[in-house]
Length: 120
Image 1 (cartoon, rainbow, N blue to C red):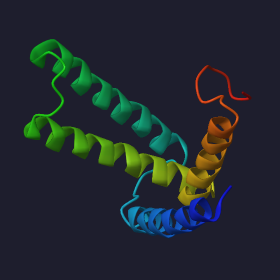
Image 2: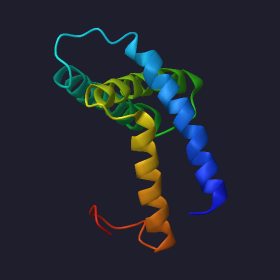
Image 3: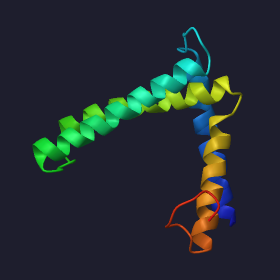
């Protein structure tokens, strides 16, 4: 990994951990892990549903400002659930992001960004 990539990771980490900390202040639910996991599944379904309807009703035009406003709200809910689920599991959001980016950059460097499977 080059120096620019590592600087980007550090910058992302600060922002993501700050978001996670702020999201925790609004995390009021009865069952850690289970509640945010189920919420994540539900909100992800809502994102998919909005995209499906956009394909059906607007020929897949995703540039409409109203659509973008609505999908942004749903994606924000997905982010909130990811932040709180990972916090319940004592995993920093920055660690998830860094691990994911390192994996993807490694795959890209090896020409393995396409395909399927975790260990490409």
